[in-house]
Image (cartoon, helix red, strand yellow):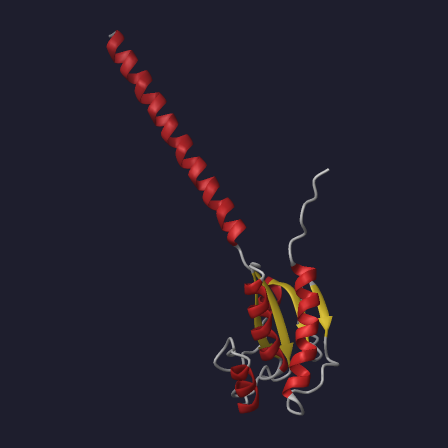
Length: 172
């Protein structure tokens, strides 16, 4: 009888240890998922085929260089059918490609997930971003001078990345 009790106690301890171990693994996975989550910046221009495309491509390159867990997407309020040749060629000369094969319409879901929204045009009234919105509508048109527009965008991207990167915790 005593052996049966000891066996039951051992079995109960093993069972509880297993339950505890499983709970710890699930908590660890949840923590890893949150730590690995990538923040998104949404660049929006009217047609989603020029400024927002250039901004997203250069942002992603700069963020990768800094090892930041931030990525950018390009969206349109009124999408074109394709990305114009001058934009594709300009990106190619910069060693980049557009993140999307063709312009994609902005959705409320895009805005809801965004850590930051940067607009090159006015957002329609029915869109409501959750976070901060920056207006870069004064960037010169890419159709007039790709290099000048790109350079202005890159200057602003560097400031934006500095603003978005995690702050270092200083020790006392």
